[in-house]
Image (cartoon, rainbow, N blue to C red; front, side, top):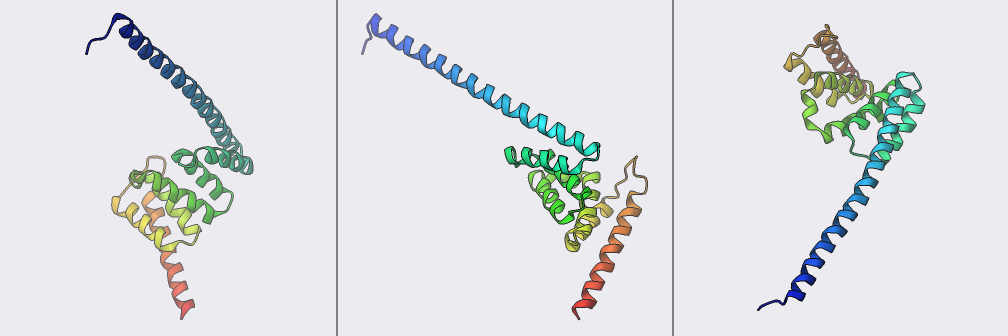
Length: 173
């Protein structure tokens, strides 16, 4: 099968037109994605600023908007968990911190995250989960330069968990 010169020009023109249309569509979609990213980044930065200024309610509102747009954002869930914990709702904070771990299972290697998770689980009375997390901290023998009594704190939290579990056990009898 041979193509005439006219048919070849037509095929080439169609290919060029398809490539140009593809580039235009990609550009439009990329610009939309950039806009969404900038909006979410602005909301996130605003939430962090509000949190650092002590406006925990404002930070929660901004973070909820970020999480509405990006529910699987590790950092937004992490900051939301810490902010909500500071605000006193440790059960809700535990949910966000657990989601961080679901999104990034490698956070079990982060000593700061793990001690925060353990503290929140203890405060939320999730003693079994707290025990698992705190034993991981203890077995790993982690220390942090800015937290010299890390292991002592882990031991005191574990003791608190044991006492709470003993109280629960005696209350159930």
